[in-house]
Length: 98
Image: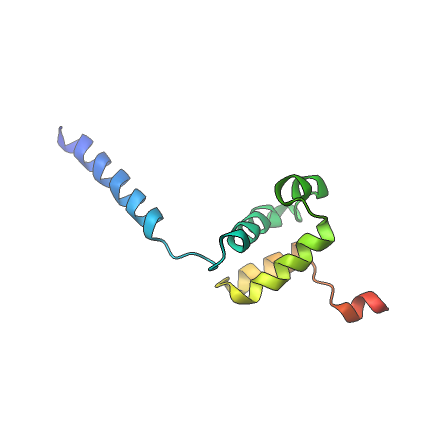
């Protein structure tokens, strides 16, 4: 193994170690998956209803409701929460009654 191959091997090994030991965004893996999905689609204005149905088996309104249930327990940064709020506006129960 030459020095270049060794360096590449070491970089791959380090990347694997980092991924295996990274801190999770949320203690619940389902919630983490939900947040990651929402984060991925946020720059595009949120996920399409079909995508949400295929991935989670729920309506868009239920997805948004569930997302905002798990956000407070996550370690999302404030700017991430703002991005999610822009893509997935949270309707409180008072807003629905009007």
